[in-house]
Image (cartoon, rainbow, N blue to C red):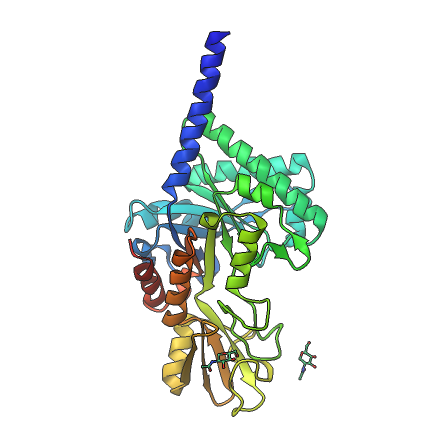
Length: 368
Ligand SMILES: *[C@@H]1O[C@H](CO)[C@@H](O)[C@H](O)[C@H]1NC(C)=O
Ligand SMILES: *[C@@H]1O[C@H](CO)[C@@H](O)[C@H](O)[C@H]1NC(C)=O
């Protein structure tokens, strides 16, 4: 009896120490996603500017409900961690699953049953371990019914239990678990499963961007406003909603874009926020990486504006108008994250930066 009690207490202590180690290990997340679709070479990432990198995206196979990596991506994903460790041996890497181009209904279907959740969970852990990632990141965009939100909660709880079991049985520290979630604690009228998120995830990546874009807004707007007086659409509103819902600020990581959106103005002389537009400019959806935006500005001698009330940059030339985050916006957001006790920040995506300008500004603003 006493021996059993002692071993039980040891087990509890063991779990506690591991959890403590994993939580104190992540005292800051200064992160970026790398997008395989960008074709930016992994070996070119200046990983010394980050504490964490997300490798995006692994896929969910809707037939098997397992996490897979396409054969085209396998060479870069399986060597990702080794490659980025060359410039920063202490970099922490996470394999990100899903993303904006994956089918939300596949995730809903997988999360709807215990057996399919188990296929997803077991395969994700196997894949992360075999490729040498330190963690897993779920990008299900988005659960769209109350039942799907409940099932997300079940998935997260079971994922955490499996990750802890795997850690205890192999004697390795547990994989990190994070998720990229909507800007606010509710996806429109649906509340996220707060208790499961709080209990299961090491942190959440708050996607505080895509508020305005030419595919869904016929007026110009600050795509990733930190503040947006008179509206509910801002990074600050989103962060406050997560805290009010019960997620501690030190589990929140503020996301910002290394890209912007270009609109075609109806009237070249009406070039502020909320000016009428006739659709996207420059690219099909109007999305442009920061490097491309800087090229546009220099080639067209575009007028540049920083609005510090909203915390957003824009530029215009003729009838082309581009909303984006330049260094002022990025550094203000990093200071906001630090001053409000958030765990850190992340950018989507590293290959869109321009000579490390934004990555460096962010890293220096947070400091060491
Ligand atoms: C722009 O969108 C708003 C809201 O959907 C709509 O009321 C308005 O008529 C649209 N304006 C134009 C010029 O299409
Ligand atoms: C910043 O943008 C807001 C929202 O459109 C606007 O009310 C304000 O006048 C702008 N500030 C400056 C200095 O232009």
